[in-house]
View 1 (cartoon, rainbow, N blue to C red):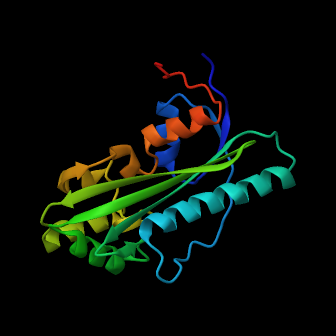
View 2: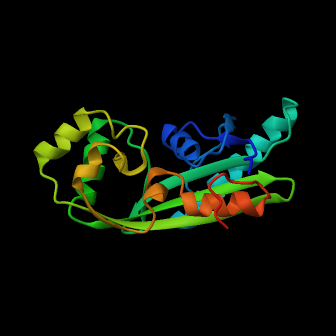
Length: 200
C-alpha cells in the first residue's frame, strides 16, 4: 500500500521526525501567520485556529508558487496551566519562570492539527495532562542552561532532557511532542491518503 506525499507546514523537527516514523513522505512548506492569542480565547480553540490558519496560509502559498497540488498538514501546540497559555520562552528568565510554575503540578498540552485537501480544511485536537516533578532551582537552572527550553511551548521538550522530570502523562505522548499520531492518521485516511502502517 503506497503512501501519498503531503506538504508539512511546520519548522518543528519533532513533527518531521513523527511523520517520518509514520512512513509519510512530505515536503516542507513554511509560512508565517500571526500567533497572537485573542482576548478570552480558550487554549484548545487557540491551537485549532492557528493550525487551520497555517493550513490556509500554506494553501495560498502553494497556489501562488504554482506548486503541485498535494494535501497540506499544519499543527500548533500550546501548554496551559490555570487557564493561562504558556508560549515559547523569550529568554532564560522567562523559561525559568515557566518551569517554576509547572513544578510539582499537572498542566495541559493541547495540539491542534489541520489538513488542507481538495475536500477543504479538516481539523482535530489532542489534549493531554502532564504531571511535572518538583523542581528545585538548581534543576531549573541546569535545564535552562541546556538550551532545550527555547522554541518550545511551556519551556520544555518531553522527548529530551525534560523526560527525566515528567512524572506522568494522561493522553498522547506524540501529542505533547507536537503531532498526535492517532489523530493525524485519522485525518490523513479521511482525506484518502494511504498509510503504510494501516492495519485495517
